[in-house]
Length: 273
Image (cartoon, rainbow, N blue to C red; front, top):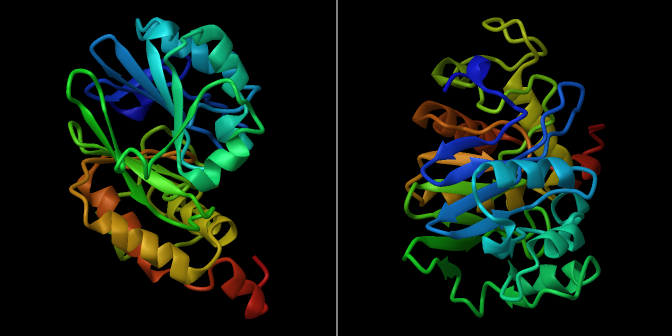
């Protein structure tokens, strides 16, 4: 569905059984995107959101028709408060004794500071996958230090949606749920205002985000190499816009592979980011 036809006050189904349940604010410079994956009467919430966004996220979850008690897993791909801040609220509303939190063990150490109520499962102990009762499979791919030691991404084998966490995120002064990046952006010189849309350049927003958030150029390139091996239909980042076309996925991957002076590399080089 085109961006102009979307109602951001409601959930948006971005693939079969995959829902964006995030908070849209045109004045925000950093959008957060929780996602709900539903299979039968079972649901998994990925990077559930901050404490302040809880009421919006939960209302959209309920509007999908899912009873919060059917949320069996909470997946957190790192431990920042914009993902994990509402864990106690989720636990209280879901009130599901069988609900567990899935993350990397490096993350679970810190997630315990949000709540110790729900048992923690480590992706290593799960053999890097979670399978719904109906057979739908989520696979976990490690992307260490992008941007935390325990960072990983999640791949839905049914829809080929990659939940990419902070990777492919953006500082989005020009935000829509779906990106406006397309093939001509590959050859364009990124500039402040896009000559095609007359809006802030989305490639620059992605570059700026990765330069500031990722620790180093080497870390980012390793993560991109891991992701390139996957057959991806949609990239759903925790921040910024969703990449929902082959061209947008290709362009952003190539642009990130070109990026220099990321994180500590820019500091050492004396570059002010």
